[in-house]
Length: 455
Image (cartoon, rainbow, N blue to C red):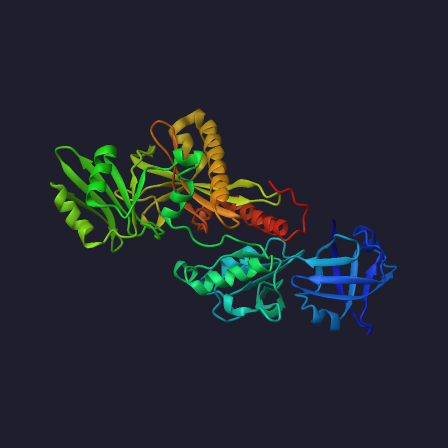
């Protein structure tokens, strides 16, 4: 495959020809065929080719051709050719999300986030953000939003994309049968769609239970009975109860058993940390509503004694991405220190954000670098294992990892659509940009605008 960048212009000539500069023809190793196929996303047209003496890598198209192939914009883009008898322009990168229909902020409060996704490579690829209702399968087009150079938005009909990055924000919507059918239509057209849907906590446990990396996952039980809660408390002294489809630390209970003192429950209610004590196990069971089905769709998880700073446990958010070579890399790491009395380290619950280097240095001093290296290696192992056992392509993952008092690494959560709260730390701004650049490079890889080395 030959690959280069070129600049696409409109020509005032009326004949439906493709006009190609000599340098571009040479770079793409075109066969000087009289007919060339021009492809953008799902749209293509075969036209007579005219080779012109013009310095630089240029392509000139009549307005009628631009309209027929629904070219997203003029200007620079990547160009590739496999056989020397066709030119692919692009790639067209689709960002699947929800739209609310105003050009000022077409994605509501998520507009800045969608903009940040579309900025890497914006001058050499075509990005379009769209919702499921914006696709016309019969015509092979998407009516979505393109980012303008000055930062605004324009709604335009463009070809079906070469690759789709799924950022639908609703767990409920993604579980609907209609959404599943919609995503499968891309698969049937051989359009890669990655980050298929949200993980439930039990999904990850099930994915890894027969994999060697399972040693990094705390013991867990789905929909626990009172006896299972008691057994795990006796074995581990403290446990967590987490909703399987939860996020942001909402609905989590931390339960501790102390012989002679009883059972202690911490949780969050109305924005405040709550601590309750029960002398007897029956009182705990009643409060949790175990026998009334209140713990259906909950996972009970072994508690881990994490390393601490100022007597507050810390864990780590690893933001993982695939890069342009289809390899998992650690894009960023944030350390989260729990707030006093908090069940979790979530920032909205009073947690404090630090860099991993800052946190580990406070705990381990001169050994911090080797500890961090080991955690990075574990995170790569986990990402590879989840991808291997999952049925759909993944390009991004978020891990909540912790280190216990014996320096063992544990994985508490895996997110297929990780949030980006760690990037609020001023020390992680570069990693923020790097993570988005990796996602873009992976889109280019999946769209076959880069030589592929499948692992």
